[in-house]
Each structure stands twice: as C-alpha cells, then as structure tokens.
Length: 533
Ligand SMILES: [Zn+2]
Image (cartoon, rainbow, N blue to C red; front, side, top):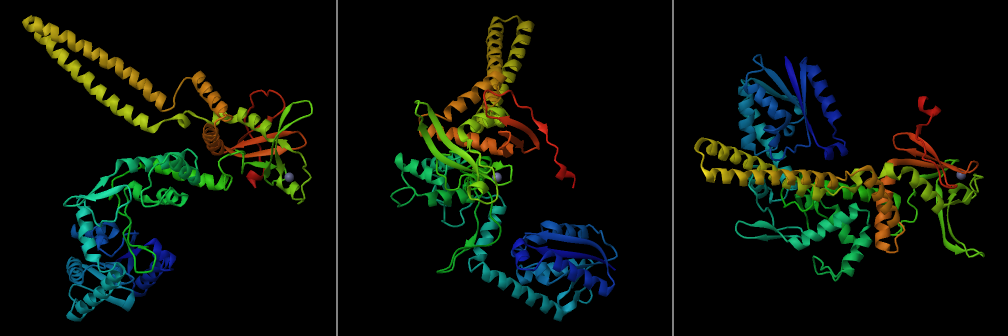
C-alpha cells in the first residue's frame, strides 16, 4: 500500500530535540514494518497546529485537496507520528475532519500507539480515542495560550479575513487606540521621532548619541521619563512593531512575557519601512563589531580591517597632535601591531602614522567605496516616482484630448476647437518637459550623477571628515567607515616595504603607499596559494 508521511515541526520544537529527522525516522521505520511504500513526505514547518490552520494551508492542505480530486483511487495511508501532528483543533472538528478524510479513502495511521483509522474500521472506540486525544492535545495548547485563546482565535480569523482590528489595547507608544470599533491612530509627532531614530542609526549614530541629541533638542519622551535614555532607543530599534508586526504572547504574574505563535504582520500601522529598518539593523550590527565602546569620535575607521604582516590586528595608539620644535604640527596617532605591542612574538615595531595612511588608503578606495547608491535618498526617489507617474498620466490625457480637439477642428472648422487644441498642446509640452526634469531628479535622488559631480561629492565628503563641527565630522566619518568596511576585507601593513596591501571583499588587491602623492593604485587578483589547497 502506498503511504504518505506527514511531518510537522517548528523551530522551537527543533531546539527541544523533537526534530524533523526524528519524526521522519520514526515514520519511515513504521512504514517499513508494515510494508508500506512511502510515495511522499509532506513537511509543514513553523505552521502551528494550534488553530488547525495546517489542515487548510501548507502541505497537509495540499494533500487533502489532492484526495478530494481523486488522486489516490486505490487508497493511501497518511502516516503521522502522533495524532496531534495533524491537528490540535476542537475535538468535534478533528473528528469531522478524520471522518471526512477516511471516507475519501485515506487511512490515517499513527506511529504512537500503532493505530490505523480506516473507513470501515472507524468504530466507536477509535472515535472516542481520536476525540479524547484531540481533546488532550487541544487542552495542552489551550493552556499555553491562556484562557484568552478562543477570543484570540476569533480575532485572528477576523484579521485573516482582511479586517483591520484591534486585538488588545496594548499598543506601542506612538499609537493610540480610538473609537468603536477600536482603531489604531498614529501619533505623527512620535512616529517622526521613531523614524528619526532609525534614520540616525542607519547613518551610523549610536543609541547614546541619539538619546543625547533628543535630550539636547528637548524632544518630549513617550512616557513619564524625564529624558531619553539609550535603553529606550535600543528598545525601539529592536522592536518589530514599527514594521506593523505584533507578537502575540502571554504574561503570567511575576514572569517574563512569552511569545505565542507566529508574529502577525500588518497588525499595527507601519511606521518605518522595511528598507530603512533593515539598513538600521545592518548599521547596528556593523557598529557593535567596529566601534564598540569607542564613542562618537570614530578616530580609527580601519578598526578591524588593519592587520600586521604577522596576522595580528593593528591597534590604534592615539597620542593626538603635537607641535615639533620647529613649529611643525604633527599628528601622533599610530597603528601598531598588537602582538608587538604586547610583546607576543612579532618584531614589527613600525609605527604607521594613522593620518597619513588614512589619506593614502582612502585615496585608493574611496571612489570605489562610495558608489552612487551611497548618496541615494530613498524617500526622495519614492516621492519623485509618484510625481513622474502623475505627470505621465497628465501628458497622456492632454495628448488624447488634443487629438480629439484637432479632429473636431478638422471636421467642423470651429475656432473654439482650435483654441482648445492650442491649449492642450501647450499643456502636453509642459508635462513632457516636467517629465524630463523629474526623470533627471530621480537619477540624482538615486545618487546617479556625472563622473565629475561624483568626484566632487566625494571630495566634499572628505572635507567634512575633518570639519570643525563635531557632528558633521562624525557623520562623514561614519558614512565613510560604513562604505569602507563594505568594500575592504583587510589592510595588511608590511613593515619592510612601508606599504600596505588593501584587499577588497571580492578578492582584488592593490598595494598602497603613504609616501608622497601616489599614483592611482591598480587592483589585481592576488595569487593566494592557500586557495587551491
Ligand atoms: Zn605583527
């Protein structure tokens, strides 16, 4: 007899050792014992059986539809580890479902208890067993989901039907719940603060810095707190509610809140678009790696990239600026091999002047690192694209009307048709000109400019890296640091030749020197003997 194995598992179960593999092995062994021929394995992952969704969606739903369309006229066994893999729905509904599927010619078999429920042999005892098992299973789930489960189910069903509802009055601080039926209303001022927090994070600012700035500007907090605190900024940044997601959960007294089921998308109004959210997350991940605890000065933008020939990292030794006897101002910040400095077996005592090498390396890579997209303004692009669509519609409509006016004029020789035609042609031309301008603006907003303008843009950025204004300086350095880290894999300092090899993410490498105005460095694929080993 043919047999289909059905496996349902979730990542949380996986971690508790009730894995996909275990279910699969159990089911396969069981099928073999009974001499069944396994024709397919259906796997539903992450679809909670709690609300019985899996019976209509996912792999099991597909199987049921197959049965209904008569795909297995000679009957088939649906084999599961336990009955609750199939459903944890209301017992009466599970019973109906079992009855239906067995009527359609499917035998349902369980490894647990070695049961087989078939059309003819679906006797009273088995029925009671199914119902009782389902009941136990349902209660188990219901316990987890607390007594609110039923109400939640109804609300979720509403949501699934596309109705926008408010499930609880729990709402993030930038929303209020108003009206009957209750609706979420965005508090625009607060939403703007939230977006700003994400924007600034994406731009490389840390949460302490963001909190400080909000306090300096006197931006009111969302709660009773007297001022902004980095931990609150962190909380906002870590929350998916800004994306509109709601994670159902329950909280027992004195215990932390636990998540139940999958997050519900499009539950709250979206405050931060997915793109900005992702950029902020990337920036945070990068920050914690690169500038942990270094504060806002971002002195060493090569942190984590600079390596000594011995393989150890180069550490930054900042001594600041010094005036020499002859009045010359020198910068006394250096990159030094960490192994040498700590006396751990490296003889590279060379102190590489940080400032000189920053200039040299940026000279070599900055125009590569700062591609057009780094200057793009997404909001602006979106706004302009809408504008372009409107202008295009206007142009087409004017052109169509002009055509009609012209036809009327040619047919009737009426002066007003001629006048209308004149006006419409002028409008069409104006729309055309505006379209050209808007297209150009979109290119600019996307960051695309001519080669010279791009060079100028980068030169401006380099200027801002040494701006007197700390804010501007920080922002520019954060931008450059982000770009440089996205491009460079490693900078290897060679003490003997006083040169550095800059290796890019894609494996291209070039030698850079800090002595005098260098020539444009040539990037080549570096022969790496280890590559073929
Ligand atoms: Zn070394």
